[in-house]
Length: 116
Image (cartoon, rainbow, N blue to C red):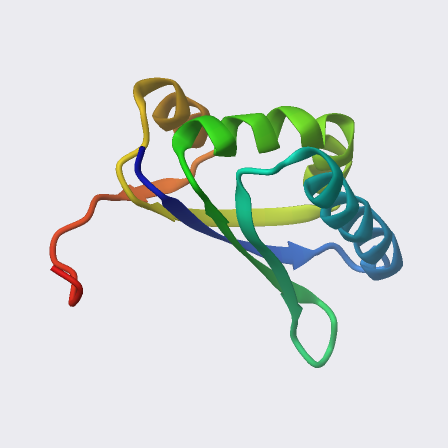
């Protein structure tokens, strides 16, 4: 299994910051309760609280897909109130790759690592 990392960049629609915060808190709780393969799920806001970055790390593509499944309607609600760009680093499986591409997420494969 190969770890996969992602960054999602959100531009929050005007007047939707409180809703974004509420939905994001739900995502974190869902990840804690249902996603044992989620190694990191950190959310950062800019000072104006109009933009956010979500940094995610999963133990495998399977764990990332399970996370997507568990977020369900909560994630759908977030996507209604933000504009999103994303990147994933790693070597996702075919099914994971398709899910990422369906959401417009760029995929970057490993090239070189200090640890190797």
